[in-house]
Amino acid sequence: MQRPFASVQDLEDGTLCRLLRWSSALASVLSAVWVPLLLFLILRCKLTGAPIPVLAKFAPFRFHFALTDRMLSVSPFFVVSALILLVTARYVSRNTESIRSTALILGASVAISVVFAAGNPGGYFTWLLS
Image (tube, rainbow, N blue to C red; front, side, top):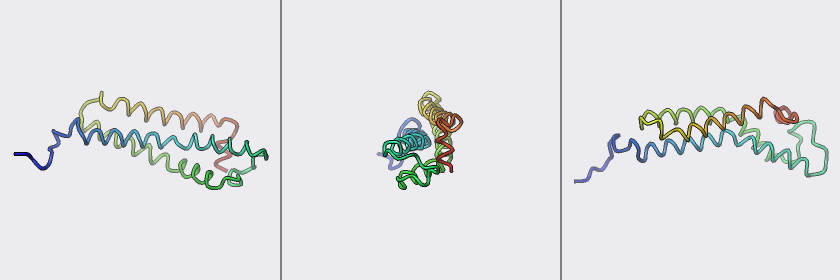
């Protein structure tokens, strides 16, 4: 006779753990999406031929600016949710090998964001915050 519901033991390295790992990887990548969005916003402003506006909110691409700003503001939420999902996946699978790649993605995403914000290349990070 087949059981209608799987037990936690059946889900250890199965569907639940895989779902947690992929969700954590997605949240990790989304936490750093603001960096390429900002780079493309700068590129679009430079390609218009006009001087770059003093404040980013005066850039000719309002939707692009709003999307970049929102992704920057929700970036900490994505990092925390990725960390929670990663810890939950570790608890469910009890295997550190299965979450290593996801943890590396999270670390790389956080490192990219921190290096870009702290380095402030060309002053564009503070330009975005203005």
